[in-house]
Length: 115
Image 1 (tube, helix red, strand yellow):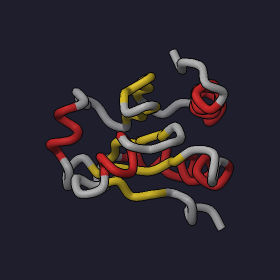
Image 2: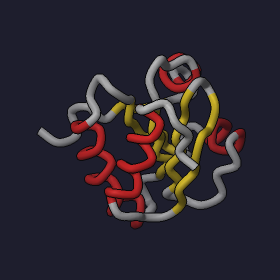
Image 3: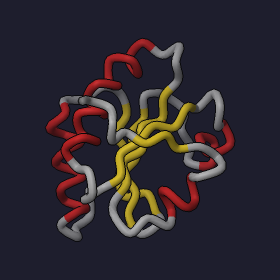
Image 4: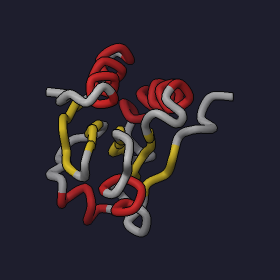
């Protein structure tokens, strides 16, 4: 079922789940009131289901965890950031085709840089 693998990132688990992760992490910065974020949601869920075990894929609600969004300079949502080795490797803003996110994530999994 779609969405089972999508994680929820919070202020409490961000360091452990994202920054200390042994695998690449895709973080969708979103908010409930954001129409484009709701459009992107099923894409993020599909990616999460496809990468279970090879990467972490999750969402961070910017209204509930604004300090993290501010720390990473999120000014527009949806913003998707890809992390590896505790650092941002790439940032994608807006709703893009699933293929774009998958290509970036695949590159990180293979040990490259997403940029």
